Length: 401
Ligand code: PMP
Image: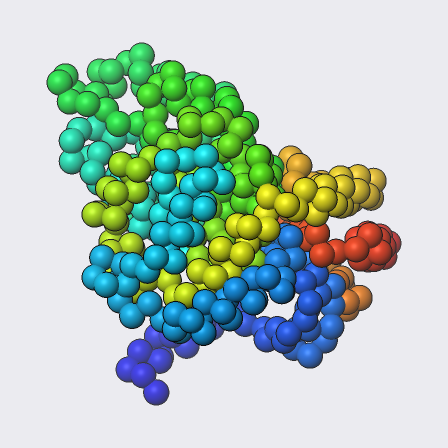
């Protein structure tokens, strides 16, 4: 018993009443594209293992080998004595693939966004005014990082670069609008995602870079769902605007099959973060096994064009089928395909009915998505066979009948 158990219990009871209580379910070992949940086998259309790399023998072997050779842990934070040559090897490989001067590893995508944004924003705020433009549907970790910095966000409509442009223009044209004070520099930041996690739509990165150049804005681009899947070498959409995205952040936890995260950009920026980012400084360095899986994934990803083509084809096929059944797939153009059904209860009922048929496509509800846009969020993997996607399509048809 803890001293706050009565508080915890009443909070949970309230969540239960509002039907938003979350519960963990237990997944046991299954190959990519499949899952055994609470003992029941299903096709898995809810994981982020977009290339099926989580079980790839090369990742597992290198993780095993690096752990055997270098130990289970890095023993300290990087600035103390935990900075292994392995970290630097992976960072150099990553920077090469991303086409950036440098890259820096972080413990997880959540931690990267939550810790890097405050480091950047606070430094800028200490010198002058900060204007922070953020997509309305940015991931919770981006939102958290912006909030932690204590900088007010100017939210632009989801993936609407016209709206972003009008907000930038309005401020630039009316400096007396409270902000740029004479003599003080203004640092502008645009924080957005290249592929959005709940909608599977993508940002027009070239246009984003044009806007950022015109308004001298620093671009922070979250590539969590693009890394491994889209762009040159499959390493994200920032590569479509070479040298023009100031910071591309991504994870190793989704298409790259393992765990951990990165930011890629200039050497000065990475050195600055090594000096100021609390989520880098005050945490133990990533362990050798994790680094081994990262290193192997980076070797593999550029070679996986056939898998990426299969994934894209599955996305096209699924969207066409769902739309044919009258379902709204939003602006999805990637491996993330939402079936937006609106009401929470309907999304939950459909997810449960699919699960009864051995198909896992988890319902996503407010507050994760805006009210009235509850959905089944289907995530495809190159590990899914055509027959698996057919089974999902048949499942949707049966559930809607
Ligand atoms: N950014 C986005 C857009 C995400 O969807 C996620 C994961 N849900 C993260 C960051 C966090 O990444 P990680 O899972 O590596 O912590």
